[in-house]
Structures are given as structure tokens and as C-alpha cells.
Length: 146
Image (cartoon, rainbow, N blue to C red):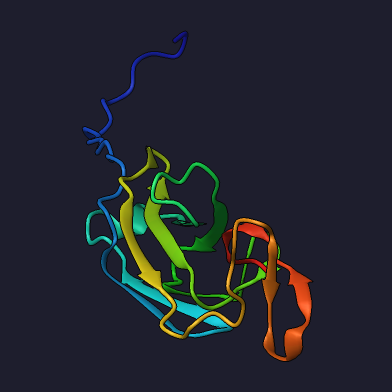
């Protein structure tokens, strides 16, 4: 510049972050008919850059339709009590995927599934009706929702 030169600055090192590794030790507890408890261990790779987790829940293994929850980086548990704004019911298989994200992008999904162990209170049939005790007939909806 017009005044003159100055001493050179110290060298600067840059670290380029990759996307987070998969969360590990994913545990899904599906024994309560009204809720699902999930827990996981955050990836150890660059934990200071981890911004949060994306948890997807679906009725199909291909995740064609899914419900999504976003939680912050300090959270490693989630309690689901509904899916697609409907209460959870027994007798269905649910599939879960979880991944972390950071400024570099979203990491790889860690996918698992569970099935409620209790018998469903309603037997689903192709005609969209089902008989219940006492002979009453009620409408049944697809995919395990009342």
C-alpha cells in the first residue's frame, strides 16, 4: 500500500470437514403401544461440527413416505407418539433412519426397524371393515391407523 509493506502473517491451516459418519448403537424400543423410544450414539468424527440429527420414520422399508424429526446435536434420544399426525397403534412394522448433519452436508443413514409386539386391537381386512366384539362393524383404515 502507500505506507509500505508489513510483516507476513502466520501461516493458516484449514481443515475441510466431511459429512458426519453414521450414528451408532441405535436402539429402538417398540413395546409401548402409545410410544416408541429411540436412542443413539453420536458419531465421534468432528463432534464440534455436528449440528443435529434427522430421524425418519416410515411404514415401508423403502421410505417412500416418511415422517421426519430434526433434533439438535446434544440430543441423542427421541420419543415418537405419532406418525403422520396419527397416534401410533399396535401390530405394525415401523422403519427408522437416522443421520447427522453439519456444514458439509448430511451423513449416511443408519436404518433399522421394529414391530409392536402386542396384537392389534383391530383386524384389518381388504373390504375396509372389521368386526369387533359384540358384533359391531367399524371402518378400518390402511396401514395400521385407527
